[in-house]
Image (cartoon, rainbow over all chains, first blue to last red; front, side, top):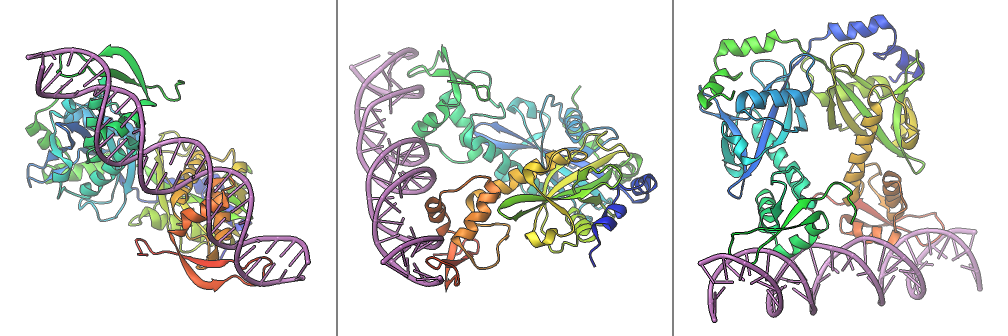
Length: 226
Length: 226
DNA sequence: AGAATAGTGTCTGTGAGACAGTATGGT
DNA sequence: ACCATACTGTCTCACAGACACTATTCT
């Protein structure tokens, strides 16, 4: 039986002050965790950083519990700093996993994240090629799937939006990163023409390699003209 | 100072049992809320359902606190059932708002959702055209923005993926919904040709209107052939 | 000179955008 | 007969895909 508009407003959480405080203290609260798929490209392959459970030998993603007064992004940064020595990432939220029984220890919500890092940042994690990262603990297989999907969408239009490459790079290096993320060969000429509009050409060229020296490019600032 | 792989595994949350339970009880836990942008199309306009705070007169989205043993989607359904008499929605997660000071009442995480409903379901909420839904409480302006962005992305490729229309509809009715969501006029012929491949033609036609009777279409099941 | 890699010219097919036309009902 | 609306033919433009060709360096 639906309520009238007046009844709705009086029964909502934001009505009188007493009711508000009641709502915040009366209900049990879940633990909130963050779990992060740390992705990188190494040796032309898309890889994810894993931890190993010493009791079971199973693999899982790095994660931690959210501390008071902390944002989710800060919790992700703290977990990666403490467990993998990784600094300076910009985590992206993917999804909240909320099945009440997903963690045998109790009621835990997990906010899945994606973090993209340079390959040398994965020293302290096991870098597993994404197709091989199967049978992870919890719902971490699904998180890896979502992270890859998101990364592919981001890399479909723009050149290296996550900054995996250094400031200057050749078109072939850029294409190599995009091929690793996409999982397929990309047509060199079509890729070049599509990306050129989004890149700024430098007056430098790559030296020391065989063949015609490749022009070095920089990523173009967002909405940079010409 | 980074840890070795062995140290990482021993210090992680999933090592010995005693440590695990400690993690779940020792830290303060946030309240978790859900807030939902209820979108619909009415009179050719994209509208969002709002509640009014009786003290301040400000508008906000319907929401509630997550109860124990409940999923986020169930919390959204409960809040919409109790506050708006809306049944049978399929909420979509958008984003977790986590600023520690976003709610003056305390530490509250809010998981923003999108729910799409038929226009007649909005009786008990104020249906505000999206451009007019400004200066909402909390970060609800941002939630509406995310919800609209998501809905537009969903409607860019597929015919009425959220099922705003009844089972049978004309191409003009379909285009009307897409125009309301997109916010722009769409070329009738181009729209028709793009959508035809995703629709199944029925052998019925609309009767009673002036002009040539329009063919009635149905949405095609996912990956339905021919 | 020859190998190797970078970069371009160009053809083809596809699909959006646009406009004008044809089809088919109601009044 | 006329109008209103549904639907289609067709031209143009832009761009992906593909292939072959040219350009420039190192050995």
